[in-house]
Length: 306
Image (cartoon, rainbow, N blue to C red):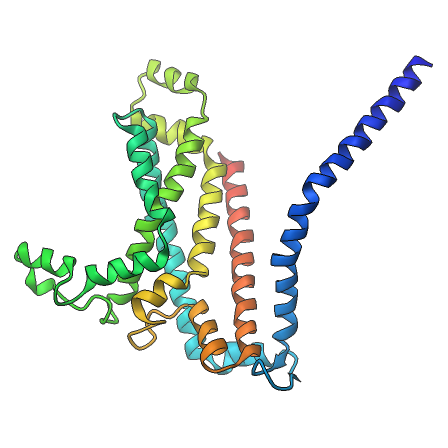
């Protein structure tokens, strides 16, 4: 009898816990559904129509997707290439810098808290403000970069950094590094700080250097956080818009810096092609989803080897 009563009591506790969980989770679930899930389904619906945003909607099926990929190939290919370049530079330039900073700060350097705060400050600054700031840095006449090169006797390297098709894309990416390297650094720093101190002490007793401890102990133990940082960096690069828009006016010179979100903006707000614009938006969503799956599988295989 006592065991049956205990069983009933435990079932009641589980049921009450489920109700409590449902009550606390439901507001977030509703907000996620209203602001994330429903807009995606609405975009899928609108992408199947030819519509100027005001007049009658004409159902065209998959014609918008065919037009985007095959008939609008030059613009589509350029934006896709630029977004992939941004993603590649984020993973292979921005994240290694963030990882090195995280390893150095987590080693107990003097002023650790100060530097951690300073590196994170650009994250909370508006991308528009950062874009305007770097417009001044890149100004060909009085910009800080050209002035610095001139003072070093490297005047032949001066150029209109955002006006040259050879340098505009890299120049547009540099502020992105400066803005978000502190964000990834803080994530990696927090992961490193969670590693038990006994591991580091054991490595020192075995005669391991700081570099060896980082490569053999710290980095393998923060692989899950590295995975998160890679996903965030890639997705952020694929959907970047505001910084590129401020710096290059949505793709100048000659569309050499245009990204998929810039193409979507042009279709929606300059040409009133709401069907094509939502089609491009769906491509961006699909692109982010595919890269997320690929990255997760790549890290899964890496963890299996490690």
